[in-house]
Amino acid sequence: MYKAIIFDLDGLLIDSEPVWHRADDRLFAHYGIHPDVEFRSSLTGRGQRECAKMVIGEFKLDETVEKFCERRWDYLYQILDESVFLMNGAREIVEGVSKKGYLVALATGGHEVEKAKELLNKTGIISYFDEIVSGLNVKNSKPEPDIYITTAEVLGVQPEDCVVLEDAVNGVLAGKAARMKVIGVNIEAAARPRLKESGADEVFENLIDAWENSKLI
Image 1 (cartoon, rainbow, N blue to C red):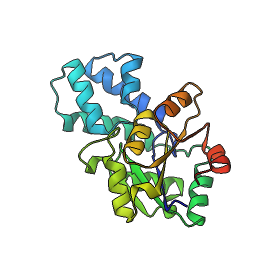
Image 2: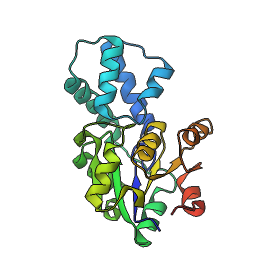
Image 3: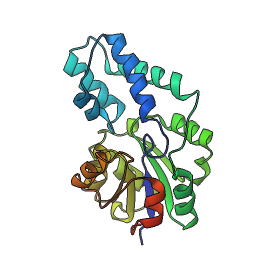
Image 4: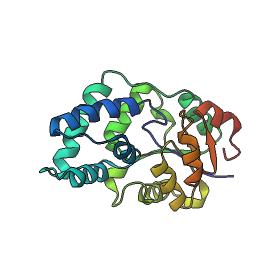
């Protein structure tokens, strides 16, 4: 039996991906740039600093990584603070794994720890988490394994004893690189084969399906 379950946040537990898209629309308009769908898709699941470096480099912006991230967060939280919603099955699976005795952690690449706590508190599930780790506090962001290795260390378990739940390819790659089992979850049919191809051990349409049918948890 595995000892710890580690959850991503955006697009997995909270329905924030549409909010990120809206925030980025405002962000890109501010800089007068027009990233195509493929480039925008490549940002999904990456840490804030990595996204900033990619955009600044691709469009040769006269901007610092810190200022770009600050502006992106401003746009995001202007929208997200008004309303934050759990994904279907989020409460059930987080409560379920906690009651089964697993250590439960959050590993988010897009938010500071305190902001992640605030979002979890707003949705009423923060009490189920033993640890919260931000990718902003590790050297390399997803798809590198740093955030998951750090989360295992904080929990006091070996990476091989952890199961990760992720909705994005970069997150799956990070979890597998950390030598963890990975469950891919994405409501979009086109995304699920990509999660499997990236190494996910199991792939499901939603968290209810994962909770009811996963052989890993």
